[in-house]
Length: 200
Image 1 (cartoon, one colour):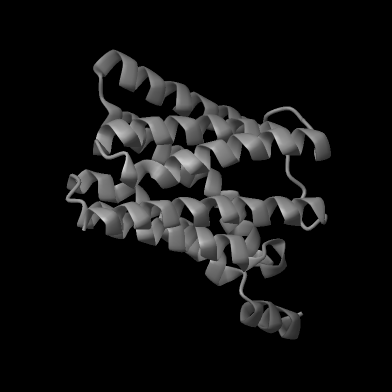
Image 2 (cartoon, one colour; image 1 turned 90 degrees about the horizontal axis):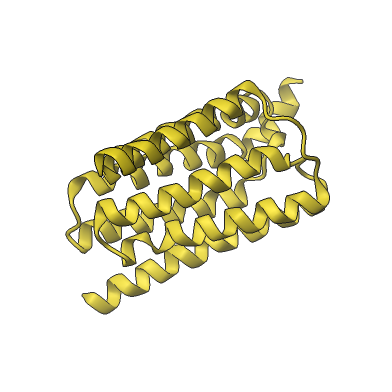
């Protein structure tokens, strides 16, 4: 069982990293217009998520995907600096940054990694809303492949948390992230794009 869960953790991490590679290729091909300022906030939140999830779950293997994600998010931010623009942070992004600072304070002052992780999860949810709204209105705003890989990686991590007997609260983050990433994957499918073209 130990070998299986380690393999699952590594698989989730590889899928997560692979999805970032696909996303960056899309950005290079001009299929998206990333903003370096936005990615700076997401990188900060991803790092905070990985560290707080590790302490909350007490499980390094179950956290492999999140550590991979934080590194990939930071590298994406550095890449976007070379191809995108660094515009001023919008009020929403300042709000996300404030939530990140609140999570840091919660963790430092009250020694609550769980509280910090839930705040970061709330920030992640808020940051998803514009993408979700955009792809709901126009499925061509995203391509499903990276979102499918992210969704699959979070599903594997959720399974791993169960198999490794981690505390139940550690299931909240990967399950919510399955729903968030999976919704983008579904809304950007080729079949939905075909229906969108027929309706316009």
